[in-house]
Length: 173
Image (cartoon, rainbow, N blue to C red; front, side, top):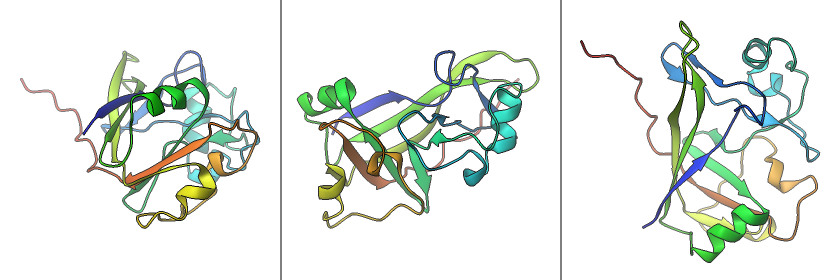
């Protein structure tokens, strides 16, 4: 089993701001769409969060790259290009675990830090059309960006059960 740490979501380059922490829970904002994505921030219930995090530069009407996608205890992750090439060369596949982390800001102080926000145990992986034939495949509840849009030949999907939610950060004094 391999453990892959994968940085996702808003940061100073993609989105231009950290993702929020809501009621003690990190909420990773998907990066803005740039490959013909169909999903908007409003469609995934993050319109107000993205507008607040970006001081209105982005709104709920803007398209987003909802990846990794979490729903119904499952996770779908798309990879392409150099990132996918690295995973392929390292032999990442079934039984491996992705640990997703990103940049977040404390709601009271604005302090920025990286935090783990989700994990996935890989049950199926491969080219988008091929992965749908895997026995452990579950169709996502909304369009995943790596099933449409403009992607190269290395485009791949990783899918599997979402690991239990990362616990809230607690200060012990």
